[in-house]
Length: 175
Image 1 (cartoon, rainbow, N blue to C red):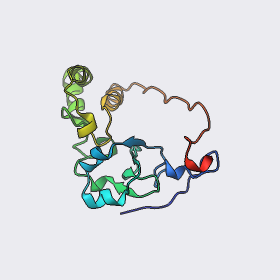
Image 2: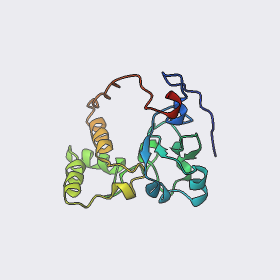
Image 3: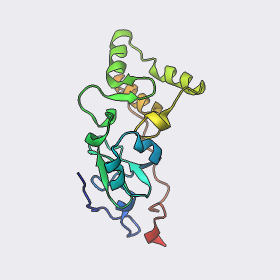
Image 4: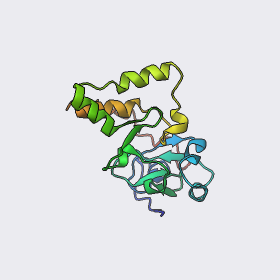
């Protein structure tokens, strides 16, 4: 499954599709190729080419990984579930230590608190975290854990920081 549309133009007139998800236009974060290799078949990895690979974190978008030129790998092509993109259980959040949205919800209902963030922070300090290897996003799960806990407590999440300028990130088309 591939989707090659690039309908989004950056503020500088270049195609932000080079850095943005080709399906939804969200700016994805770079992910190490070694991380991506763990979660997709070699054929899917080959479709991404040799350039930078990005992860689309938009929960409503079916794209998991994409390449700067728009080749996409969809969430259903991964060997693991992406909790933030799933609507049905299981919805894993912490791939290192086994926390899921469902486990956080169960603890919240049973205890009125959630210990996962403290638990993960302690394990990170102890050097037990392997997010770069085990998390399909290649990043630490603490931000996502925090967002889930805030939602369980019906608290607002922290606002996203405002971009400092309209620079499109220095893509090659900007000169």
